[in-house]
Amino acid sequence: MCLAIPVRITRLDGDTAVGEVGGVEREVSVMMTPGVKTGDYVIVHAGFAIQVVDRKEAEENLKVFAEMARRTDGARRRAGRHRPD
Image 1 (cartoon, rainbow, N blue to C red):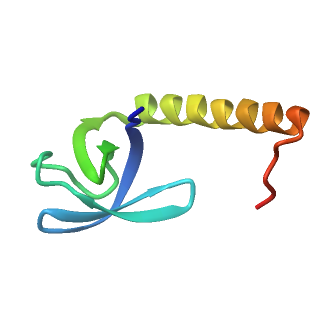
Image 2 (image 1 turned 90 degrees about the horizontal axis):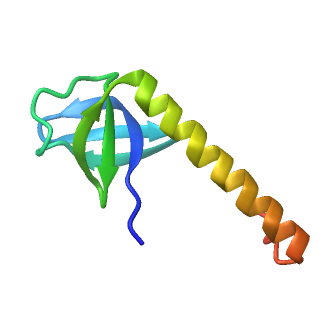
């Protein structure tokens, strides 16, 4: 299964950027999102920004991902399969 997540662009350098989500920074190609600016949110799939999204939409999506992670972690704990960090 593939998953694309919203990422906030923190630095730009040509067709390459640094994006941040949840305190983690990653290099992102922005060659498919011309006009992207520092502070913009983009949907990232396989290391490529594929769409610019507004802040409200990005934050709503991130809340959904956080809830999914919380529920998955809870289910693992109940099943005795939790892997501590």
